[in-house]
Amino acid sequence: MADIATVFAGLAAQLETIPGLRVREELPGTIQPPTAVLSLEELTYDTTMERGSDDLEVHVHVFTSVSSERAGQRALWTYLAGSGPKSVKAAVEADPTLGGAAMFAEVAFVGDVGLAKIGDISYYAAKFVVRVGVAG
Image 1 (cartoon, rainbow, N blue to C red):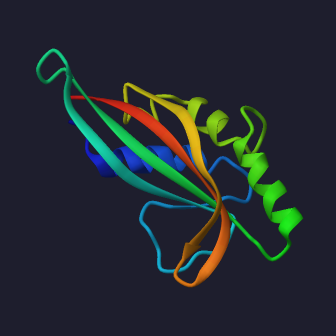
Image 2 (tube, rainbow, N blue to C red):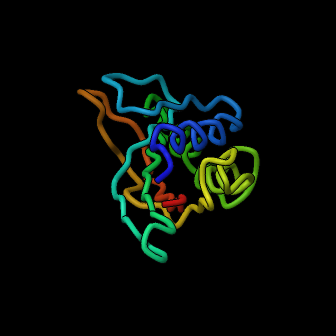
Protein backbone atom coordinates (compact mmCIF):
# COMPACT_ATOMS: atom_id res chain seq x y z
CA MET A 1 0.00 0.00 0.00
CA ALA A 2 1.12 3.52 -0.70
CA ASP A 3 2.31 5.43 2.32
CA ILE A 4 -0.57 7.35 3.93
CA ALA A 5 1.71 10.34 4.55
CA THR A 6 2.49 10.46 0.81
CA VAL A 7 -1.23 10.38 -0.04
CA PHE A 8 -1.93 13.16 2.47
CA ALA A 9 0.96 15.24 1.08
CA GLY A 10 -0.39 14.82 -2.46
CA LEU A 11 -3.92 15.73 -1.40
CA ALA A 12 -2.64 18.72 0.58
CA ALA A 13 -0.68 19.92 -2.45
CA GLN A 14 -3.84 19.84 -4.57
CA LEU A 15 -5.83 21.75 -1.93
CA GLU A 16 -3.06 24.34 -1.59
CA THR A 17 -3.80 25.39 -5.17
CA ILE A 18 -6.98 27.03 -3.80
CA PRO A 19 -6.19 30.72 -3.20
CA GLY A 20 -6.06 31.64 0.49
CA LEU A 21 -6.89 28.18 1.87
CA ARG A 22 -4.59 26.91 4.62
CA VAL A 23 -4.18 23.13 4.68
CA ARG A 24 -3.34 20.97 7.70
CA GLU A 25 -2.54 17.26 7.44
CA GLU A 26 -3.39 16.71 11.10
CA LEU A 27 -6.06 18.01 13.47
CA PRO A 28 -4.68 21.12 15.15
CA GLY A 29 -5.71 22.55 18.51
CA THR A 30 -6.58 25.86 16.85
CA ILE A 31 -6.99 27.10 13.30
CA GLN A 32 -7.01 30.33 11.38
CA PRO A 33 -9.82 30.15 8.81
CA PRO A 34 -10.19 29.44 6.03
CA THR A 35 -8.53 26.11 6.76
CA ALA A 36 -8.84 22.56 5.43
CA VAL A 37 -7.94 19.71 7.79
CA LEU A 38 -7.35 16.16 6.52
CA SER A 39 -8.29 13.01 8.43
CA LEU A 40 -8.16 9.33 7.49
CA GLU A 41 -11.55 7.81 8.22
CA GLU A 42 -11.40 4.40 6.59
CA LEU A 43 -8.94 2.04 4.93
CA THR A 44 -10.13 -0.99 2.96
CA TYR A 45 -7.47 -3.53 2.03
CA ASP A 46 -7.42 -5.73 -1.08
CA THR A 47 -10.16 -4.04 -3.08
CA THR A 48 -8.83 -5.63 -6.28
CA MET A 49 -7.08 -8.96 -6.89
CA GLU A 50 -5.49 -9.78 -3.55
CA ARG A 51 -2.95 -6.95 -3.02
CA GLY A 52 -3.82 -5.15 -6.26
CA SER A 53 -5.19 -2.05 -4.55
CA ASP A 54 -6.46 -0.56 -1.32
CA ASP A 55 -9.04 2.21 -0.88
CA LEU A 56 -8.82 5.08 1.55
CA GLU A 57 -11.60 7.38 2.64
CA VAL A 58 -10.14 10.74 3.57
CA HIS A 59 -12.25 13.52 5.05
CA VAL A 60 -11.36 17.08 4.18
CA HIS A 61 -12.94 19.37 6.77
CA VAL A 62 -13.12 22.97 5.57
CA PHE A 63 -13.63 25.70 8.17
CA THR A 64 -14.57 29.36 7.59
CA SER A 65 -15.11 32.19 10.06
CA VAL A 66 -18.37 32.88 11.89
CA SER A 67 -17.36 36.47 12.69
CA SER A 68 -19.82 37.58 10.00
CA GLU A 69 -22.64 35.10 9.44
CA ARG A 70 -23.30 36.06 5.85
CA ALA A 71 -19.64 36.32 4.82
CA GLY A 72 -18.67 33.07 6.58
CA GLN A 73 -21.48 31.08 5.01
CA ARG A 74 -20.85 32.51 1.57
CA ALA A 75 -17.14 31.80 1.89
CA LEU A 76 -17.96 28.17 2.70
CA TRP A 77 -20.24 27.96 -0.32
CA THR A 78 -17.35 28.86 -2.64
CA TYR A 79 -15.51 25.72 -1.45
CA LEU A 80 -18.66 23.62 -2.02
CA ALA A 81 -18.93 24.65 -5.68
CA GLY A 82 -18.45 21.88 -8.23
CA SER A 83 -16.05 24.05 -10.20
CA GLY A 84 -14.22 27.35 -9.94
CA PRO A 85 -11.04 28.66 -8.33
CA LYS A 86 -12.06 27.80 -4.74
CA SER A 87 -13.80 24.49 -5.46
CA VAL A 88 -12.42 21.63 -3.35
CA LYS A 89 -13.81 19.14 -5.87
CA ALA A 90 -12.09 20.88 -8.80
CA ALA A 91 -8.78 21.15 -6.93
CA VAL A 92 -8.69 17.46 -5.97
CA GLU A 93 -9.80 16.21 -9.36
CA ALA A 94 -7.42 18.48 -11.30
CA ASP A 95 -4.79 15.79 -10.61
CA PRO A 96 -6.61 12.62 -9.53
CA THR A 97 -3.26 10.84 -9.02
CA LEU A 98 -2.34 13.37 -6.31
CA GLY A 99 1.08 13.90 -7.83
CA GLY A 100 1.59 10.16 -8.37
CA ALA A 101 0.64 9.11 -4.83
CA ALA A 102 -2.63 7.45 -5.91
CA MET A 103 -4.26 5.56 -8.75
CA PHE A 104 -7.30 7.82 -8.40
CA ALA A 105 -8.89 10.38 -6.11
CA GLU A 106 -12.43 11.71 -6.30
CA VAL A 107 -14.66 13.85 -4.12
CA ALA A 108 -17.62 11.56 -3.53
CA PHE A 109 -19.87 13.92 -1.57
CA VAL A 110 -20.08 16.68 1.03
CA GLY A 111 -21.79 16.32 4.39
CA ASP A 112 -22.04 17.86 7.84
CA VAL A 113 -22.48 21.36 6.43
CA GLY A 114 -23.11 23.82 9.27
CA LEU A 115 -21.45 24.85 12.50
CA ALA A 116 -18.55 22.91 14.01
CA LYS A 117 -16.19 23.51 16.90
CA ILE A 118 -12.45 23.20 17.30
CA GLY A 119 -11.70 23.65 20.95
CA ASP A 120 -14.19 26.23 22.18
CA ILE A 121 -14.42 28.16 18.92
CA SER A 122 -17.24 27.71 16.38
CA TYR A 123 -16.73 27.81 12.62
CA TYR A 124 -18.83 27.27 9.54
CA ALA A 125 -17.72 23.90 8.22
CA ALA A 126 -18.25 21.15 5.69
CA LYS A 127 -16.86 17.63 5.41
CA PHE A 128 -15.73 16.53 1.94
CA VAL A 129 -15.48 12.76 1.54
CA VAL A 130 -12.58 11.92 -0.78
CA ARG A 131 -12.13 8.36 -2.03
CA VAL A 132 -8.56 7.45 -2.93
CA GLY A 133 -7.33 4.26 -4.58
CA VAL A 134 -3.72 3.23 -4.06
CA ALA A 135 -1.57 0.31 -5.21
CA GLY A 136 -1.66 -2.58 -2.75
